[in-house]
Image (cartoon, rainbow, N blue to C red; front, side):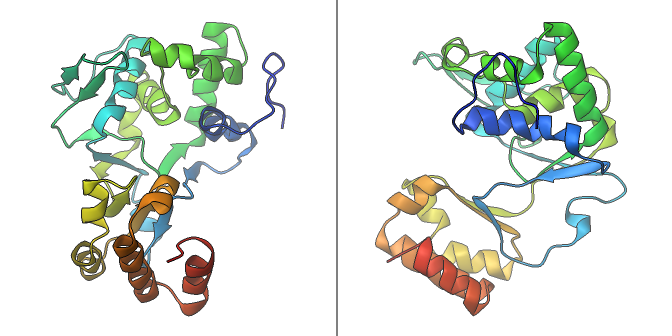
Length: 251
């Protein structure tokens, strides 16, 4: 894979992963491709219709502070938000926070379905506009300087901004996010999500995904780990459960 001629890429990084999720479109022949994330585990049977009906699905929800990426993408493409969200700004820190109470926001969450031809058009647009290789642009736009200046744009919001800019958001079904349990750290919210009651409710209500961040695995308490293992034992076969209990979540 030809990467970039001006940036020396020697190590994996969050920024490089984001760039490659778009750049890989150059090597894909299918009309669509789905990006997954290793922290997202499917926990019940899924079908094609979860991702694609008459059109691919684009999931909506509340992205928390990640909504800043959406705002920055709108600024980059010089467009207005079609959803008219009301934002709440917390300027008390250098990396200021932005939130909204709206639950119909575009998300950055995987699984994320890309239309291959549109991603290729996005890359061509940026390379022509910036007069540089796409990876050079992306990695320079998501470096610490851009974080300090609050100008960063991650890959789903760069893509969705381009969809709005080119009036191609209509190529998607806008639909609520797949039922998901999330745990990102050892905090009150994660402890609630990994409680026995919450996990049992997820099974009874046919939740599709559990999102378990590596920080959470390392930091959650014994009770949460015990609840998780009981949960995985119910939703997976013995072989997969043993893989998880022996290598990922250890009591």
